[in-house]
Image 1 (cartoon, rainbow, N blue to C red):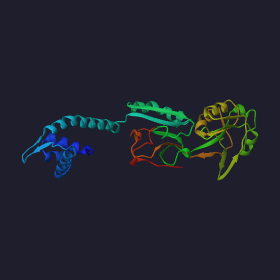
Image 2 (tube, rainbow, N blue to C red; image 1 turned 45 degrees about the vertical axis):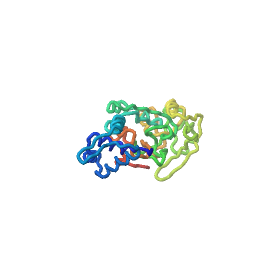
Image 3 (cartoon, rainbow, N blue to C red; image 1 turned 30 degrees about the vertical axis):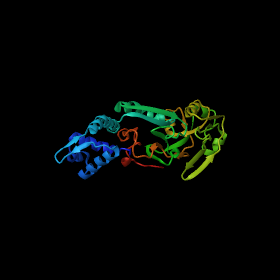
Image 4 (cartoon, rainbow, N blue to C red; image 1 turned 60 degrees about the horizontal axis):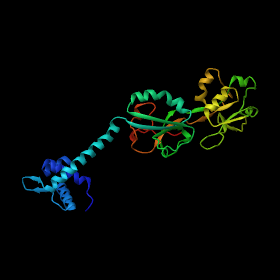
Length: 307
């Protein structure tokens, strides 16, 4: 027996309910000749007559009555299933999984969690925070938050934090024991806290720029870490000079717990982006309505930015 198509069963149920090919064709949205041909094809595939037809009426045969009784609940179940999917479109719901690079999870995401969940109570939010350069598709995440230069080129992205500087900083207790560096090359004489990237294992270079001039300093020191929280703690404790993102140290500098060094010598990074796989449909279409969920927007409204 040939494989029966869903469109054929839908047409059959429409005719059975209306007892009219004309009314069924209007309901399904097809031409009357097409409706007649669809029912004829279904009967040929099954090898039985489903309707008795006259010029004045249409009635189910015994086989048609049996098929109608069996098929109607199935089609109604399909309609309910599709309606259930539509609820994801009409009202944000389900699980939203985010992969967030440290420390942006704490700095950018944490303050927004409570208002976000209050606005979207049907959403279950799962956040994975780490320093690894995770493949969000392989990890089954819906979106990620990462510094721009680490985002894969095939992602749809939106900037959520502007370009920022990387600064050399030290605690007053450290500067009480060591002369303050005035030029990047002065760091050769300092105990520098270096950062090893968890995602590739390399120690991050100390690159400084000013007025178009760029220099890379091969610093040394007694401590290497692969965790930004530990880097910050050691810097505040006066272990040495660190070179890290300005947003992470701004509050400490303002409070006098850290001192910004080297004047205008710094390095600019392209900002922080929320990104997701390039696809038209998104897991939950709610991102344009909340400052956290800015980037996984409907395809027609996506903003693409890349530094």
